[in-house]
Length: 439
Image (cartoon, rainbow, N blue to C red):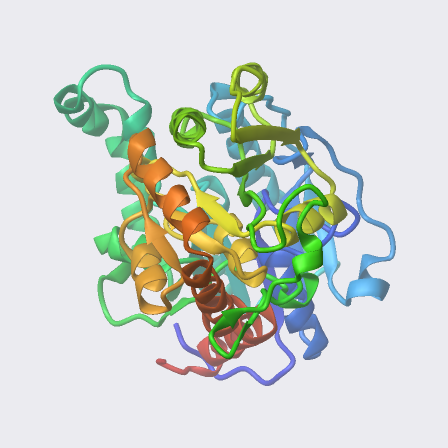
């Protein structure tokens, strides 16, 4: 439906996952969007879960959010869960959809809330946007589904057995979810996404002529200093930065960083294999790992066994200030994500490029094209320690090329991932949906 609505609009955001005000900066996707929309005078309500997905801890209603941020946060009671892949998480998502729909109906009936003009609901999970679709139909609101992952296809990689068996089992186990997604997207008035790759991988997301928009997860560029520049084709590096026992002409060890979850979908065994190869080759590099997950303990144990010119340092989960400082002190950002995870452009990439880190990337498709177009880094083959080691060794030995890639990486961030630009455009598009725009 495309009705002409006077501004300001009543806009609901339905997302149970992102950090809310009070849970740490910087604002991520939905906080950033809510802030922009509220700043334009719209009445914005963010419905989220009372259980923090990231911290695996209960949430309390943030105080003074309406005064400080201009929008409201409403918590939906759900059961807790400890593992991202678990029956408990699926049950929690069911709680979210059912309770959100009930609370929304009660709030409208009692006059506590006005009927929304636009409901933007993130997918996954399915339960939240399905409830949003029923509400949008009943309340005569425009429904926008915001696609954040290729789901449920991503579950196929978790099934046991060889590839042919997983292909056979997938439709039996997840066919119902795929059908629900198709129905949901057919009901949507418009579809947005955090990556072109997600829309390209889902024919039901691009069917018909309904409006579509891509707003990448993005980064706050002001958080990070710009990378070193080239002066007269000579790297602008400070000789004083070299250790006292190292000649000024010698480059310091190449500093690489991987940030993110330490789970099976990440190419962490390949990182360790590459570190051993680099040490055997005498390549001076430090591979930093920032994040936590089920593999953190085993990664720490393995890192302690690596000796020689290359070392692996596992920092665990850092607070934001320490994380920004670490990333800013590095040269290379490692995108160690297995392609079968179906991730397109993860948060870490946006931060890496904001800091101007050369990217060493395993992901095909959209991110691979970005890296090529902006000359922002180089690929490696996931699962191949030799391939990753070769990429790191090349950048360690060619600092001129490294700095050129770092400049390209920052340009990528400025063009594609700058939240100061991309989220206002997202807000423009949402306003257009309600005004009846087809673009």
